[in-house]
Length: 83
Picture 1 (cartoon, rainbow, N blue to C red):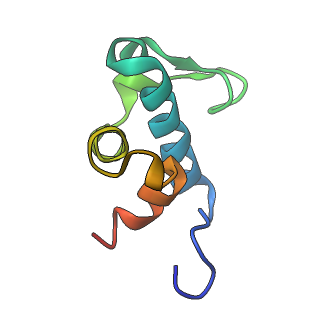
Picture 2 (picture 1 turned 180 degrees about the horizontal axis):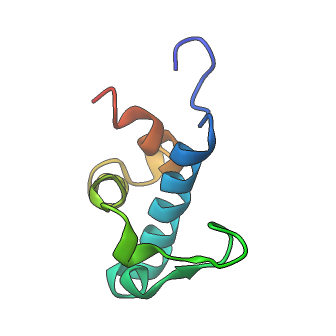
């Protein structure tokens, strides 16, 4: 982060960010029903039932209840491994 800033690199961390963003915007009920047509092309993926959602719930909680508008969700997801 010190050298390149808060940039998400590679596919898997970006997918986890997308999942955190979906959870943050739509809530946990919709998250567990979410079928993502952008991953596992052409079949898609039932995300809520095929991932371990710890990072997504942690990022959403930190954004909603701790940092609020002082950080973006992207920044929270980048800093979670460092915290």
